[in-house]
Image 1 (cartoon, rainbow, N blue to C red):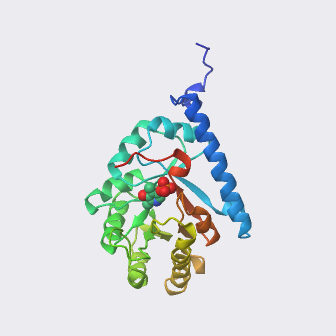
Image 2: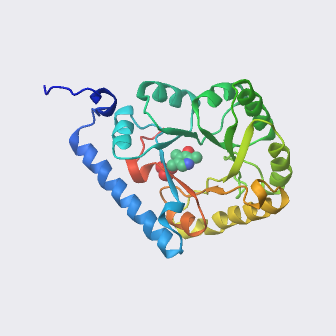
Image 3: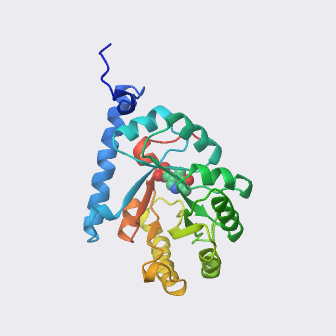
Length: 255
Ligand SMILES: *Cc1c(COP(=O)(O)O)cnc(C)c1O
């Protein structure tokens, strides 16, 4: 064993991931970053205008730690319980955790303490409870409103028709800070097929900006849209956040 220097403790969050898997992750990350930059370039956007969220549901803590060591700092989880265990075990300095899955109001308190932002706010009731919990915790919680653009019964989110009224009520809550919109596009083989859905989210955001002005007209800046199969289309349509699981970590085990 080599001698440890003072200060090594914090810096060497050693990953137990086998070298080969680590290399594969590094290669996938390089590939994703290159594709993101290309997609941004094609649509005339600066590469830095799109942020990568590594979706780590079902991903082991060893792999998450390796991802962090490779420079990923924002992680998305879709279940409060799973995230809670991982966040506690990992304790990654400077990492940000975002909740991207449906949360029941009885878990809202936990969600407020665990997450830096909740992207999956899908009802006024949930926003009210989150605001109350955040206020009690002495913080203002950044949120995105999830929209179910395609009206899929299996998905949560506001219907486009109800979004503006809900957003107006949510914007008036004291301890949540609405920052934009999120959607999960339908699963399709051809990424081009989701383009109208993603475009619709951007158009909704533009209407929302006028109808519920925040931040002096520059409100609702974030558009979280684009997953492993469609993130390039998402970037082309104006995504500021892409949420990637499989493109970084490979296929997930079947549930
Ligand atoms: C799982 C998940 C993702 C990532 O999906 P991939 O297809 O693996 O990139 C993104 N957003 C949400 C809400 C998810 O649940």
